[in-house]
Image (cartoon, rainbow, N blue to C red; front, top):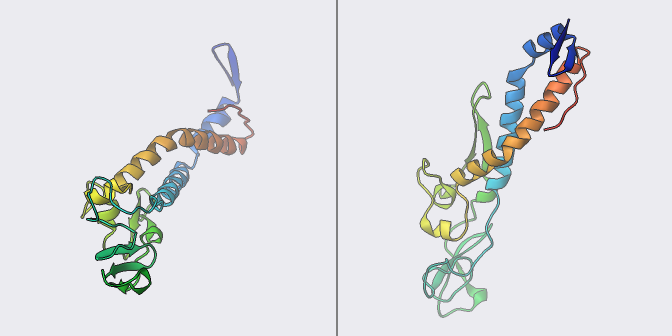
Length: 190
């Protein structure tokens, strides 16, 4: 059977319809979910550059990651410290145990059928204060926002924007591969 659309003749319509009816859409959707979650997991692990003070603060009220006499500061991947005013930089005092490693705490989690995938932080109690979105508890603090940390909401929005064109390309490739099994070739770009 042949079909003519806009002066283009399509043949093997029965095979095309069969191919489309048998297309494994659930598997395709699972691939898309996995790809989006992988991108989100990679992006949420990005850290802003270390800074001496939080933008918008005055003086030494927030020393960030720089040892300052008489102030607490945080060494990434190590933990928090206090620098007494009477000691040198080599004599800082550790305040807590070790870093919780927020950057590497993010994991992809999906529901039983793979229909919903989330990226969550595990075993880092302060994750929400640093990167929490509007529906998270706790939400991101204004200090962490000013320091440049992306929230989970911002990461999700960015992934959705970039995934639209990627999704179209994935769909074309998936369909081309599937209908080829039925002896139908297709060419095209997105």
